[in-house]
Length: 227
Image 1 (cartoon, one colour):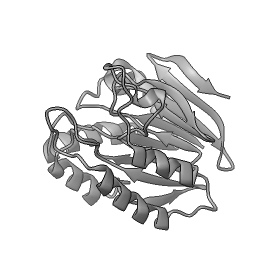
Image 2 (cartoon, one colour):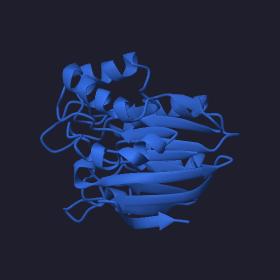
Image 3 (tube, helix red, strand yellow):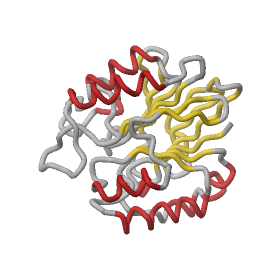
């Protein structure tokens, strides 16, 4: 199985055409939030149509810059993973959208307590006999993926605890545009490819549900990988 991971599209879809072959050959495309740039249903629909033109197999979580109308659109289309666990082939995908409170306040934010409630419910839905791909816009605390320009880690302690407890095979994340890279929390690979319009995406290959290849890409070049 081949999965392409994207994040932080912010309404800019031009780079999709650069990777159209990879997208069309993938078994699934996964987006880790910020599909729009403070957009509502109209912008969300436009971006999703561009994605579906490349691949009809699409799942995502909303980001903090996706307004409630966009989030509702994703849910109505049946492509949202927020608070859900979905079986796809021989893996389970589970997701959490939004982010922790940001400077300046954005439309879709959650406290650590709200994440704890969401993730407790999500854990009950997950089939642990299958490998898990966890999709979250808010990165976990303490990896390269949440290392901000300020020089501080700005991820979620609650998301990190969820990963430590559940041990998903891979965590796709985003939100922190400069936090590009690959890291590990225990056995879980955590990847943030950075915004799509900067040329960032992830290539994940699974064989019998296990990771057989994982690459973080930037402008078609491999910048980090697990073989």
